Length: 577
Image (cartoon, rainbow, N blue to C red):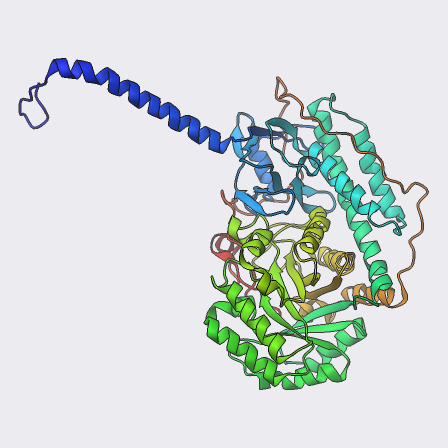
């Protein structure tokens, strides 16, 4: 036998014949063991196969499902597995194509699936598919929109029961009854296409009903509890230009509950802001000081971050509260931001006793890697010693970058459970800011109307929770409020309701909840229905990323990047001015 080099090689044929079969058997056995080991770790609880249908009852292919979820390519793939009890992220990108459907493998614990999904007219919702709250722990075939509608309705019914003083408006009742009728028209034995259609149409109405309840009850709740939790109605200011007009408008819209959050820009000494701070105090407007915005965090060492707080606290004993960290779970911040928060909070407690410490998280649960998902990050980075020095915990919310919708109630309740002692609220809000327009809310054709609806919904709904200050601190306040009387009226109306007590809505004759049918996993259909177009996805604008994107936020100094760049490298803060 000659090898490739031309040399003769003698073989011991007897030994070869003896060893090769044994080696082959051992190799085969090893492959089997490894394969079963990997399969067992990936499919510890089995596989959940998802069936998707549009509002016409037509099946969607995996490609069409992705297009519907990621907004025709404007967004990115966003599927995550969560712990259904505490909303902590477990894994990103679990969905894979299985035949003509999408599926995910269950790890060694019960899981919920987080997935962005469009509704009409409410826009994109973050759906938490959680099997009635129990999560998925065994193999099943699930009709996505039908199960999602059952899950959302169960949460809505529980939220309604937790608000016994809420008298449903006609808007709530009409939407709720429409959703209930859709779900009552099918059962577990109905064709999958019928259930999928009913589920999508029910989701449309459930989103409307959920929004209505929270926005209507929020001001009434704040009014009833303002003796124990003083409401905050906030706006963000990051410039001293025209400071008198900006402060005057805030006072006019929201006094006696008006707050401004002043962003102290990097490189600016406290003296830059003395006239602005003092003027706000003369107008009865409370001030939340923000020495370090998330955009600027990496420009400081830990020692410099601490010193900046010392400098500003010393300069402004009249400031009413201090933001010790902004959007702290964003992936663009320093790796030691948890320690920086602890340092800053300790300085406030030592140097400004009695002044609340205010922490802002960044709303993301399925838009970046697992480590930065909001509740996962909080659990890993905020020990009890740090939490003891935090008085108010909030999060920033940008629906065009990370949809919320029907998940808002669950997020706020989870935040309350995670932080049972501090007050909670919204720390930052805005809509349709350049560089982060990946999804749409409320109105995909009239972005000004949508912006007003976002403001109206969350300025009101943010109050509807025990211990909530409300807050909001609209990020682009100067640009969006100074000449828009509709935006101004939204806040004025809220202020008046909180101050005098929100009027009771005109009661509906049938405001009681309707039982939700029990969801039972059904067998995979023998034939796949005809495929149709995705669910009313807006016009595509580029191709979606195949993996969850790093989500940064805003760019203050013209750092906004294109959607493509933002999705890969993390957009920064948009300009406020």
